[in-house]
Amino acid sequence: MTLITILIWTLLTCCCFTGCSAQVTSIVARRPQSLKMCGERGNPLKTILQLMCQLLWVEGMVVAMGGVYLLMKYRHYSLFFSQTYILLPAIFTLCSAAFLVLTGFLGTWLSLRDSRCLQGLFVYLLVVIFFLESTASALALVHSRKLDSETAPLSKVFQNYTGSSQDINSRAVDATQQELQCCGVSNYTDWLDTSWFNQTGGKLVPRSCCNATFHSCTGSVEQPWQLYPQGCQVKLEMAFQFILSFIMWCALLGFLTEVVLFFTMGRMMMMMNQQPFKYQALDDS
Image 1 (cartoon, one colour):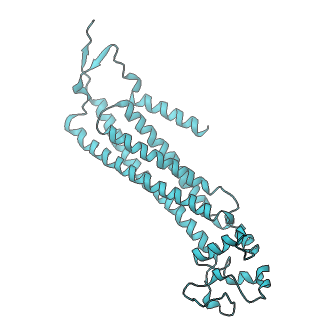
Image 2 (tube, helix red, strand yellow):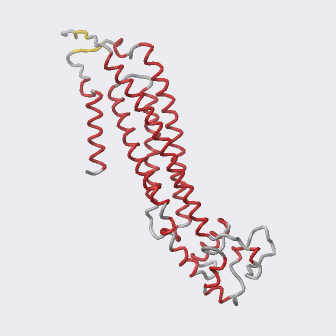
Image 3 (cartoon, helix red, strand yellow):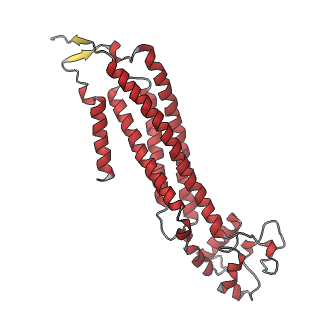
């Protein structure tokens, strides 16, 4: 069964559960007093609902930042990845962020009025968020465990280094070594097996390998202490590992918030169902 079919059936179930179809006023009308949920007992639940919905707004913005950051990082280092599947966690994260903000606004409105239809829609959106965050978290976990295989083209890009500013591969290598403060794939010795190193007479590595604290560094392999000691693959994996872990922790926070909201909505629906109905006959005119 596809995800769309599951969402449709979930919406129908929520509507049936909350009784949206029962709000037919052509025969009888409920008194306005019956719309209030058990007097004072409903106020604490509405306060909790409003606070949790404000937290949903904050979570939505934070989750969106994580998704956008992952997209920007991938765009900057796309040459070093064999596939684009690592973008899937970002896509699902941005979708969940949009639903988080929308659900937060709807929940705030719901805390100011009593509507079974709005309650059903609110619960349905929470279920959608649960599926989106679960998918984003699962994808982030999978990709965090296979970053070493996804960054396999890194070695090929370094091998094709020419040192020319007109070459996209060379610009990417220099920018990566300067930004991540790294040298080579594993360390500076990786440059010893490149054609560019042979063209320099077997003496120099790119200037982008030079540690910024050594202003007189020329990239000479005879002074390795002036070069960055770590390789770029480890640094690159650490950068993406941080983003993917951030997405997973945000999903965990979202799950905890949704548990509180599900419990709150369940109590509100029970109170509304326990409220006795008072009917008033409509005028024949």
